[in-house]
Length: 166
Image (tube, rainbow, N blue to C red; front, side):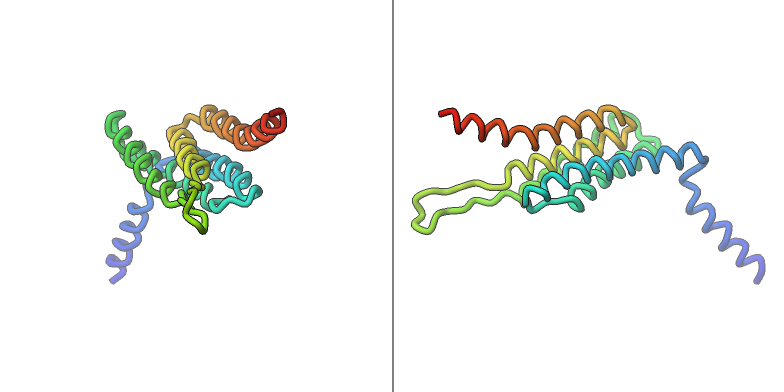
């Protein structure tokens, strides 16, 4: 009976051996943490402006995207295989973003208004930032997130100012 428990313990240890050393564990923690923080930054901006997809959504999209490519890399995927994983992330997140787009009509039906395009694009970009973080391209992920944050914050100010100049 004691041998049976030793086999169970050895099997459990083997099942959790996908992190072979402290360097790999550090890499995983850093990439996922960076993805969560950068996704959270963009989500915070969207939530602060009253948009539907906020902090949690952006954090989960960014971390999930990072996870998909990290898993592919950890299992030894070559560049062409990893690119197929990225294609799947891009398409899947596109469907998620499409769910945020609404087409509203006025009560009399004379005009329609499309809402949610920026949120959809933001979710899509957040996924790309997650992919960059998961691939170990931390500087690219950080720069992209900062540029996206700047666009989301500054573009409305510029367009409002231009409307006032007319």
